[in-house]
Image 1: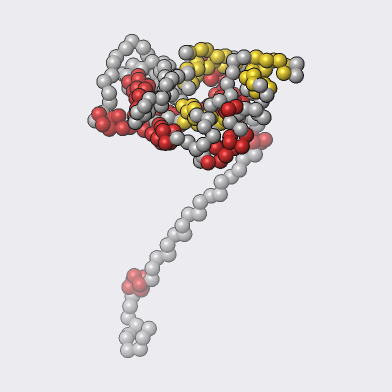
Image 2 (image 1 turned 180 degrees about the vertical axis):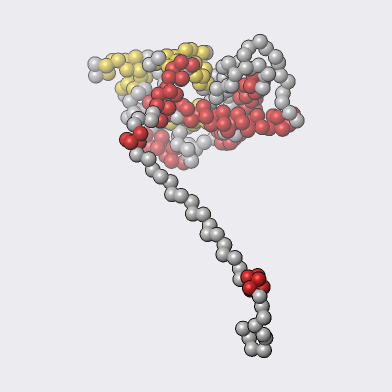
Length: 275
């Protein structure tokens, strides 16, 4: 107490001056790790097997002529869309527009099926999952047309650049060409003819200097391209198509239209679609 002031404050008054103790903040509990051995087998790892069984049962679409391919019990409906004569006109201005239009038409088909009140159990998927863009083997850099095409089309589809007829280039030209590009294109040689090489039947192209084997990595990168598209990145290509390119088209379409496109009522049972 300061001098000059009588000590006449009551206990009640004193209690007003003394702050009440605040409760300590709750400390979050540390996560407790559970030894799965104590609980027995849980079965989380069976999700991979469940996905495999579903794929084997339903199959999947992949559109890059329609054939049905089956391997190991898994069916793939492969669609190849060819665009002969692209870039061969005298005036190639905006020559990618018909291709872009076709790709968007497939998105539109899928969208209309998707928004049906009673949509199909499995929506037919004609969307283009990847575009193999074949580059002329000039031995020089990309043409302005190549750059413009890939710039425009990469916004709506996955593009994989490929050097066609790579056997017409020397190894030095091929290496120099690929080093100039940001994305290294696959250099491939195609053939449907078989030849006997070292006692084995191989696909290849016969030249005055010998046989170029399609699946020999020393001769051609076809095997790398095949593995990229089918064995290692097929699901990635499908997911990027559905989650990025299609969703971008869908959002713009619905925003421009102020709502959903016209829907049709069919008699099929309503189900979720599969990307």
